[in-house]
Image (cartoon, rainbow, N blue to C red; front, top):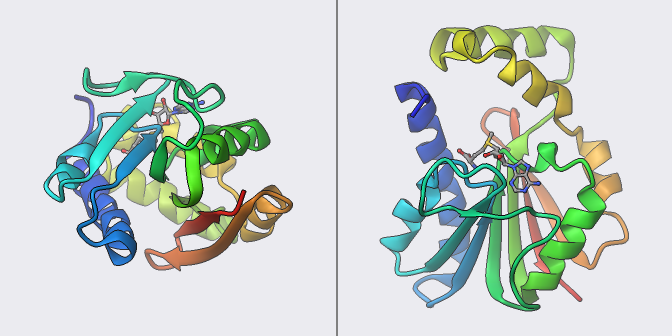
Length: 190
Ligand SMILES: C[S@@+](CC[C@H](N)C(=O)[O-])C[C@H]1O[C@@H](n2cnc3c(N)ncnc32)[C@H](O)[C@@H]1O
């Protein structure tokens, strides 16, 4: 695994935040969750303790429990999941319309979507600060520009609203982690 300890800690912290959002709405109900862009599949370890049934997919799975699949062509029937989550992956989906179409297809009516990702830095100063923090704490120096690419892809709130406009998703956007991240909380109104 080429993740630093701090990166693993950060991923786990954010997963806990996601799980809190799910628990708030579903408590101990037996629900089916799909996580998209799961990478190493850290979310499942956490979620299984809560007896939720989770499926993790990624185009480049880093762990054998993660299924190889693309967000643009989800290998599931319509209305298969109660909840869909995705963390730090949305900004990589270049055709967000196609991805959201697939997501709303496999998500049940009134099911919840939680998308968490980094927010486009407001200015160059914040961007450079994040790059330095990545270098110092998250081992970014070993990853040939991965953080720079991540930040360049990040959405601003205006761009997010544009992407989500006219979709069957009733949503709100929460800003978290000192204004650095956003969480889209969407309800499928198809
Ligand atoms: C920065 S990693 C985040 C991994 C994990 N969610 C986490 O928070 O640790 C982004 C992941 O999104 C995946 N990804 C990018 N495009 C995708 C697509 N079209 N379909 C599925 N997964 C995708 C990548 O392969 C990568 O594992």
